[in-house]
Image 1: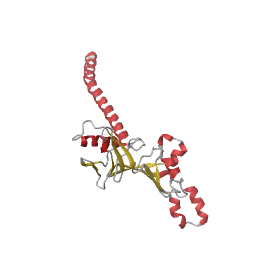
Image 2 (image 1 turned 90 degrees about the horizontal axis):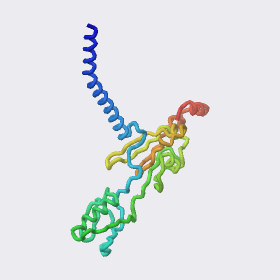
Image 3 (image 1 turned 180 degrees about the vertical axis):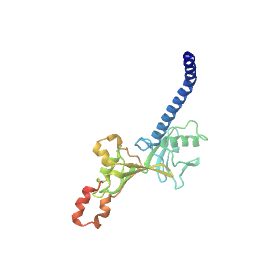
Image 4 (image 1 turned 180 degrees about the horizontal axis):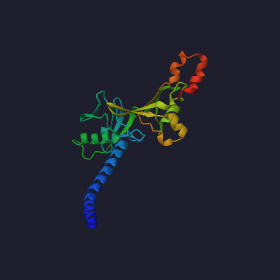
Length: 239
C-alpha cells in the first residue's frame, strides 16, 4: 500500500514539475524584463538616458557651406530660415532643421537627384548654436558655458565657480531635453557622490543640459534666527 502511495506521489510530482519549471522560467524572464526596462528608462540605473556624444542637430539661424565635388558652380552658402527650411539653388526649399550634418547631406543629394546623377555633397558649418550647458541657482558664477570637451556635472559646477554657502549640495537637479516638447529631470546628490568618491555617479553633460542648484534650508530661515543661533543651526541641519 505504501509503495502504491509513493508511486502516485512520484507521478504527480513528475506531472507538475514541468509546469512549475515553466512558471519559474516565466517569472525569471519577467524579472529580467523589468530590470531591463528600468535600466533603459533610467529609473534604477542612476544615469540619465541619452547618447553620450550625440551629433549636432541643425537649428534655425545656422549657416553652412554646401559644396559639390563635381559641380562647383552649385557651391553655395545657406542659412536656415525661421521656419526650419533652407533655399537651394536650382531645386528650391527643403527642410533642414532637426537633421544631423550627414542626414542633411543625404537630403540635399536626394533633392538634386532630379538634375544631378550621383552627386557628392559636403557641408561645413559656419555659424551655429555651439554646444553649451546652463548652470544656475546657488553657484558663484551662474550662466551659459560652452562645451569644448566631454565634462561631467561636477566639472560643470566648477566652471560656474562652485557652490555658494547657500547651496543644497544633496539635491542638485539636472534637466535634459529628450525631445522638442519634453525635458527629463534627474536629482543628483553631489555631496554623497563626492564623499564616496564614486565617479561612476558623475553624469556626463550633454548639449542643452541645465544644472540647477537649489537653496539650502538654513539660508532660507537665516534672517529669522538670532545671530548666536545661526552657528548651531548650521551644524544641526544637513545640507
